[in-house]
Length: 353
Ligand code: ATP
Image 1 (cartoon, rainbow, N blue to C red):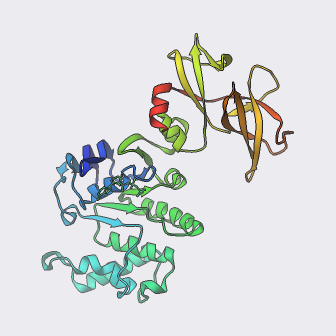
Image 2 (cartoon, protein in one colour; image 1 turned 135 degrees about the vertical axis):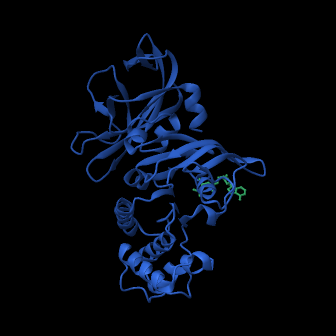
Image 3 (cartoon, rainbow, N blue to C red; image 1 turned 180 degrees about the horizontal axis):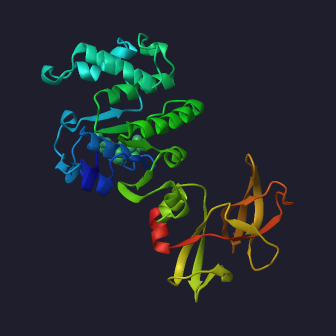
């Protein structure tokens, strides 16, 4: 089911939790809503679900305007972070619940409900556990029961709010892989909320990056990581450092010294680069600073560097250095970014507050 979100605004006592949000979700897509706390992810998910209604704007399911339809009319399945399974019901009863409480006119016969429940149990790989109660399951198993319960009503779209939020890192990883495979098999249009960028980049066909009630960028993992469209996206996804520069006659100047060349508009800008996108150099016409910390990661090291700033607080940047490069704490490192993006200074200051 294709979902079209058109110029949505949502206010809570005049506070705009969402401000002019538009998004087209293709049928069968797996979409992540990613952003810091308070950026509006859950609000958007609740509006798609029909748990709440927009102040302005519309939501279409296919070509039907569903903006004022109830949850039942929308036929969506959702799973929230605190997977509230019914404690007094077995796994099978939990999964069959949505079908059992349907109005008599479109409630499937008992045998049909049983058949569907056992099909779903197989799908979420919990065959054999149907008689257990939620407190006899692991966190990951409970989460899969919650997913099966959401799927039982054959929803047109599946909405997941921080579906793995409460689980430990290892189980999260397993469930992530599992959800991807599950999605490949069932092909449901799925939207999930996360503030975990790895989860979003690994799982989603497209990532919707949100900040302060707005969509900053929509794109594949490669798009948002390699081609961030705004200073906010550059600094929110992955590691990055920034330096104020000036572009003049195609040359990038930092503290008046040339450090590279750039096309495009002249003037003051903020240069963003990732720690791995640098080369260590010997020459004097490069950036240089004092190593204040060396952090060992699995296969590499990150040097934290202070670049002197004429009596003001130094600029702090991070640069990747190979494991065996002869560098040490307190020494001077010379380096040059090999890949970067310069944003106009006003945009950079406004959005990376
Ligand atoms: P988190 O990752 O912390 O869950 P989020 O991105 O999902 O954050 P939302 O829950 O959508 O953010 O909230 C967006 C903004 O709207 C926040 O500033 C929040 O305080 C506000 N908000 C959300 N629900 C309500 C409500 N029912 N009443 C008043 N303000 C609300």
